[in-house]
Length: 164
Ligand SMILES: [Fe+2]
Ligand SMILES: [Fe+2]
Image 1: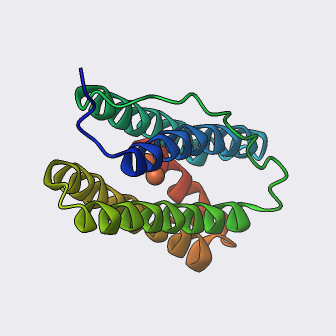
Image 2: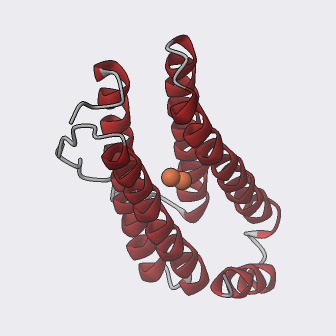
């Protein structure tokens, strides 16, 4: 049966699957980092996020399947592992999420050019979720920036994140 997606958008969604799985891998590397720093709440938050990213990759995969698209199994890059400090790691999270948002926006523009409404609607849902992720990541980064140097406050922030 014919594919219901252009080659161009098919390629972009394959890249997006790869980016989501890479994100999952990156958050797993951060989980490991925070565990080694004994910030177990931060580690827990990152592990949950890693699972979220896997589910994003899966939903793009399933969507592409529904459109009879072609799935390419691209190599997933090795994530960064040499995190220098908690604040640098949290900043890397914010920047990474901004990068993913940008990627989804670019695909949305391409879908719009092709009047691919089903794909636009799918991407809109993903972008809504991205908005939440960016917001949450920025909140954690900001809280650490404000209170991270205070041990008692850091303890509470770590505890808060362990409840995700
Ligand atoms: Fe994601
Ligand atoms: Fe994300």
